[in-house]
Image (cartoon, rainbow, N blue to C red; front, top):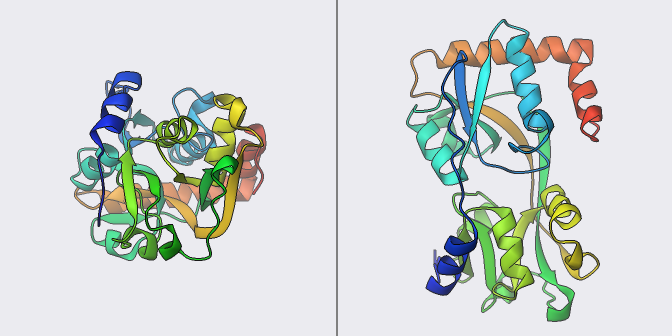
Length: 252
């Protein structure tokens, strides 16, 4: 895959953005990891966002506590895979990942699209027509088999969605791949100048469910998985999952 880490983009991002690891002294039963991906997840969101709150509440129903560490997606993914963190939040189902992750029940869903500025006048019917355009992606993200394997596309990696939107705004990227809710969140909160000036292209990269996964590298991964499933089932029976979603402005 032709991933171009253009030095000018990298230096620009390095200067403006530091992707901090929010260090946590493990005082809870379990330590999970993820990246900041609002409105689903994030250290600046109320209770860490609805996804984090649902996970924590499911374990609380089983008498367990969870700390969540926010870092880059690539780091969170790889270190959870190795068992350094016991779980990873907000994961798409990809068959090959089952060899090292135990997937939870579906918690929510995600729809991924390509975005460009209207002033670019970009139109396309298939991915091959985007050859020659600079496309911003998040390092370590899965988009679709077709997109991830498209070696004819010029893909530039970044550490997160916010950084990619910045590159789109300043013209360093022609298009970016992003979750529709994440894109709208950042337009509303960080990039109001882009409102009504961007295009969400109808080409759907994917519509996938989001899960909690437990690392199979830890010896008690089945226990952690069962605890979540039991707690989540109680939550759904009581309507607690819906209550949390509504509190955060979402509905199931």
